[in-house]
Length: 234
Image (cartoon, helix red, strand yellow):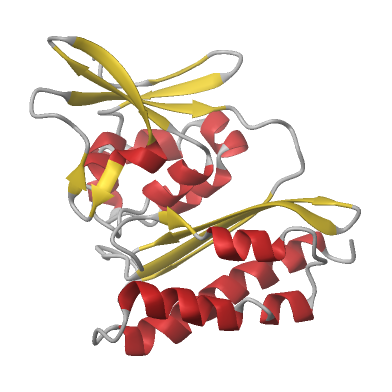
């Protein structure tokens, strides 16, 4: 039971590693404060898998397609690891070395996922996932974006890719390109060329790049359009 459940304090949420995906989806506090995590977790497997599968399992598997990982990166999650030697904490951004390889040592287990509670700033979120079907699906590509605005210009931007690279990562070149800009059609179109270069450098001419490059670029643009529409006439 120590490895199951969700606890809160004034600054952080603590999710025990063996907490089921369904329990996370049903938690009102998580729904209110971590909407991208909810949206991503809702795409994991099927209802039966979500009932039995755990957040910790989705993390330590370290698959590039792990649905929960991009939001955990976006929300600056950290992980508590335990062994007979004691405990240590590691940031989500440093936990995965490459696909299916983590920095867990041979005698450690993941015990807890720690999420700082976001400030009550006016965040806008969007998450898109691509798979071959709606249930029992392995994600082929995913993108998550979280933004804040100041005087109609993009103040902060987190853009996370899942499945495209060897592990879920931020794309800082595009984040920096967007910050300070108005979120209009011109800005949305401006991401296309730099994204092409980033993807080409990352995955080269492997067979999947033929479809992954245009599809991922369109997913990023769709996510930006979604946030633009959320803001309406602002």
